[in-house]
Length: 159
Image 1 (cartoon, one colour):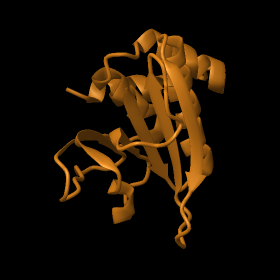
Image 2 (cartoon, rainbow, N blue to C red):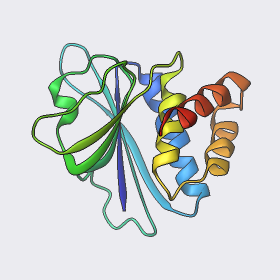
Image 3 (cartoon, rainbow, N blue to C red):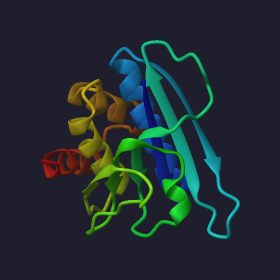
């Protein structure tokens, strides 16, 4: 089972990342549950959860295996509910890391952060293929060339 959390201010960017990631997991043969929620703090951050497994037994969010941060600066609450060994993908020039959990961070700066960070995630997460992710971008967002370019930039940016 894999649990993804997408965190950012722009509801449209968070929703796009959720839709594409959920569709790509589905196209790769996984059962998917995804939903979006909003924090109650003054900046109104949006959070999307995507749970993918052969069979999803619970629809409740669990501690995350992967965290995608769409904003350069995020509150400490973004790091709540992470599993040890969580992989963080950050739209930043510097790597971020919470103090209470062991994590690995990939920092990628891009003009279209949700696509670049999904590209990086595709390289790290073995159950979703690049073909599935490209098909998901086409199905969910119309497949504009700039979106595919940002996705490939993120994919190549992770070592």
